[in-house]
Image (cartoon, rainbow, N blue to C red; front, side, top):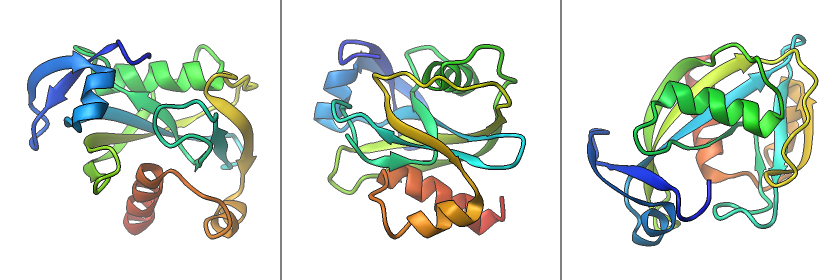
Length: 169
């Protein structure tokens, strides 16, 4: 989605209160919706990637989720499947399963957004979008854990990951 794509603007209870172009939503720090999908392969490894340098939000940072903004009128569930298939470069994924949802606050770094976190298993060969993904690999939990202190991670993804760990998921 580009800066002119229209998003639902929501309140602190995740109720739609209007719509605005993505660029305006970011510039004004309006609350909107995002879907994060943790992708695991048949061995239980997590898909990890580094975002491209030209991303609007968190360029060149590492992420353990694929995902993005939820379009105007789109459901979290539909956005999760769309984003996972687009970013992984696959079709025919099972529908991602919802795990949790929270209001993320970037504390001055771009606003707040409702973050719906999903999980999906991907046994298909991935071919990530070059516009979205600069590098990728499937990492074991031990490998991912070891990189947490070494790599610079997207803060909203890290917040989602910490919530999953706290829940034992």
